[in-house]
Length: 582
Image (tube, rainbow, N blue to C red; front, top):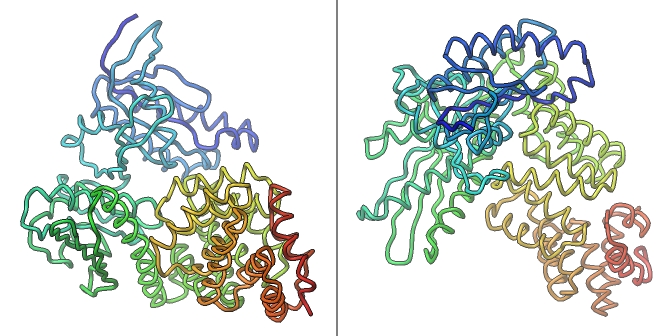
């Protein structure tokens, strides 16, 4: 068996099984066209070799990493063109992974970790995207005119060690190309500039640079706006900052800048979000921390910063969209307007938000973001009882399914799909799979964490739910559903028989939002189980006043407990109170 060093490219067709089920003949024709018109010419032009086809994928070998990456870019660009030009291939999209490593060759086929890493990277890539391993990136970083996002270390299935992953930013060339990077279409990009080290100690640079890199990575998880690559923003390290000029050079509408000062075991971090065109500060915050474990502090602060500035970016974008004439609104603008309306949390605003999202989907039926926000609209309306509950939750699940079909890397879509499976189907394993994917895709999204905590508390894992609820409240003190998250802490403590804590957290939730019906339910149950019958009856009367139509049967139907013992503990505690309406 021959061994050699090679650049391996693995390309896979997104949603191949779905495409075959929908139109087998058309899909096979499209795949044939893809190979003959795009794959084969691109590989031949760069001295590569098509090792084999795998039904829905292609395995390619190159002697040069540069040629491998150039081939991958050409293929993705040509596929995008083919999708826009021909109906037969309109649904074809590829994911591509590139690795450089030692391979084994036998009878023309190739094997080994060099191949396996490329295959795993392909599975992580976005539709239309290209991911590189560290080994491939090191070979091409100074030789190709493309920008890359550093996605950090990733654990890949059946690969012994974590692999550092880089995303090639399609449609954007690096500063070395002599061209601007701002080819983001209608989307407004954000750039994180290297934080300043105010400690005057060069040894602290690793902490400051690491914090900057963590913020870039955490922002990139949202995927709702482009994030300029690290290698581009770090070109401005230790240089005078003219935000308007930097924004123009990077093609970024928003800049994040900040500083860190360490003194003994304390560190003070400041951060600002700036609108590049005007220099206007949209957000500023200061964080003081003890630095017992530098890396834990670095990660926590990065997540807190991102959880705070992400909604500010959307608010600024919504203001920008509001200045446009209605006839000039894009799908992104309609989605922004919908998100802004949703944040007001009223039935009328949600109805208006759905209208904007329908307009967005008329412009771009493949917008996973618009489908996700439509799912969220229906979800809020059903959970909060603004419309017929079952109908709204079914509509939420259907929209989430459409979003996942458009982009299975959309964290909100995965989370809402999981919640839909929980509420409408009582499909507990699928629900857990969906919300876990949401958190994996965006660990800095408080709502993703809340979804996961909700599923855990209803599937017999309240102790595992508590750390996620605590993380939400730590990362985002202004979380929109803060009172509900605290009420969920109360339910977890009640199921764990921590009754005093259950009562205290329910009362805390009610101090924040006196009309929180779920908090009242959990307070009634906690007081009843604790034997405080008079207080339980008084709380039940207040609950009945808030929602006169509530009864035990309705509450039982709306709590999707997987374990009958936990259901009976909670519902039984409510039953033991003489009446909710006395």
